[in-house]
Amino acid sequence: HDVQVYFSDPWHSPADAEVSDVIMTGLLLSSPPPSPPPRAPAVPLTSGTFKLSRSNELARGLTLSTSYSLSFTITPNMTQAGWGSIAHVTTDGNCCNYGQRSPAIWFFPNTWTLYVVDGHPSNGHDEVCSGSERPTLEKDITYLIEVVSHPDSTTLLVDGVTRCHDARAGDREVLHDVQVYFSDPWHSPADAEVSDVIMTGLLLSSPPPSPPPRAPAVPLTSGTFKLSRSNELARGLTLSTSYSLSFTITPNMTQAGWGSIAHVTTDGNCCNYGQRSPAIWF
Image (cartoon, rainbow, N blue to C red; front, top):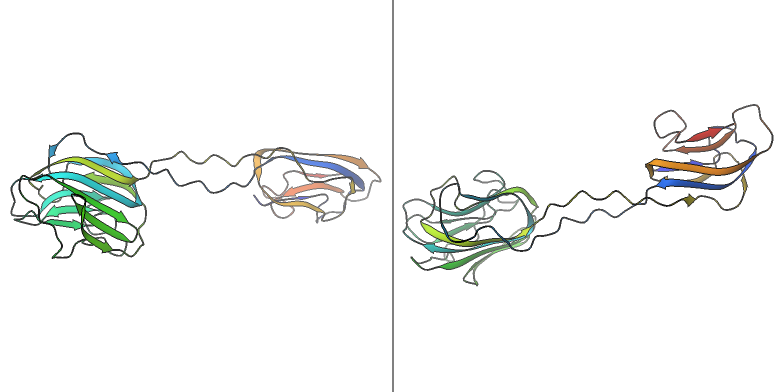
């Protein structure tokens, strides 16, 4: 990278010669940074209805963008004495670092009232609803639950109606190696049937970016010129692992010392890799 081309170089007397048609191949063109991985459309994680069970992992190894959603239908059965885990999206573990509850959903003990947490870097365990907003479901009725997260907010919808909306700091980051549980390994499962678990905002893995395109033969001069010391024809070039340098030369008089003709270098005269790639003298 950052290659300079001299005809002749700053470190030797120039050869007494005329040169023309200096051409290089194997230069790499600068290219824009790779595009972010494509976002997946809505991704169903289940088929059919299932009863919640402890440590039921529906997916792992997902990459979650900074805007995502989790939706599912749920039919509550009986209440239970402890927390009833419904859903838990985590990068690793239960609580309370960012990514460990993104989101996580429970029933409060002895109720069908939803407790919804959606963490962010400032607070990995941030509840979405205030006490008066928390929705309470009813037994044997099927509900559509949606948690919609953006960098600056999280919204809870029940049957398409917004029930809670909470501002966030806008500092979300992409989450990697995400696991999705219905329900999680750290709490007793809620007594309920679930179906149609869908996530959006997942990032698809993408192949590594292609190498920058190789430039065709690049002329560095026009016309004939006499070699002179420190005559820089180009700088800032990127040279691939296969390259060539060609030119025509007409020698004039010999001289007592080394006569520099061409010198391609990343920086300086000698003798690190890249400092003579190539270099030519009489």
